[in-house]
Length: 348
Image (cartoon, rainbow, N blue to C red; front, side):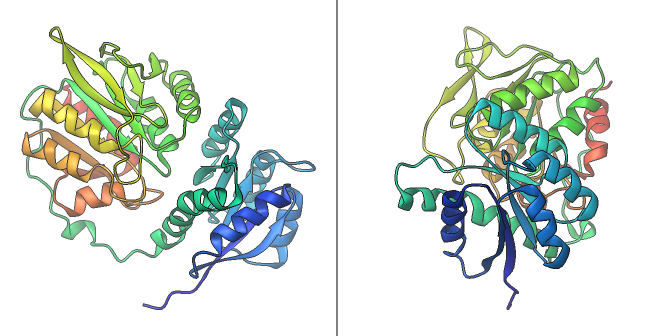
């Protein structure tokens, strides 16, 4: 099928970064940089007379910064996907999480490679699939919900003992929606693999604790898995469940990325299935690709219970869609309904 080229507007005060991003995007003939701007105000002016399919927006700029620009974009161009480009710093992570909260669709880290070739390769790896997923994901030809095969069980085989969640593009907002809506009595430990760089996951944990009032932390190797606590896999580490002296603990490792991701949802799902069996409650939220599909199969084989976010409420219906299409989900639900269903499954 012959698809039109995706038009990108780059907004960054650094000519060097704009140049690197342009070279990275030029590696794919299905995507083209059609405009560039040095700050947010120039980007808004450009969009008054030009069209773009996606905006890549720097966080920190003179005249008008990324957050101020994003707020105006959400009003003037509510359906235009915005990707935030941020430095790998605590300050950059904090501002990026704010941007995602305000409606940015995704984020990428600015290149930290020592030479231009590596920097371009890094940007191409991070940026190109995200641009395509955000634009082409809205032009999906996937099966309708009426055609999806769902497992027929309406309640878990055993009392749930743990909740494991996978998420990627659009995940921080989806996590906030689900976790904030859980009843106070919901006491299962919650383990989350969200695709994010280092530093960003620590900031995400702080935001979730603030939003939910639940003890939330970036996971630490060897930590006991405690009821009522939320654990976030650290950027660049897989998080798995293990058993030590009859207690479930968290283990972190830097084994090879799975589905190009570390943290990956797969190790978390697989290890939870291994140790908790049919007492696993799993949720797959919005995200591109199909990370977690093998782990979901492990959970399904052990009769754990899986909920996948539906297509309409997902920013990108890749990861939950893969599980739904494979017939591994017990339910495929809108984001707004997931928390209440989790409560019901735990008899709350």
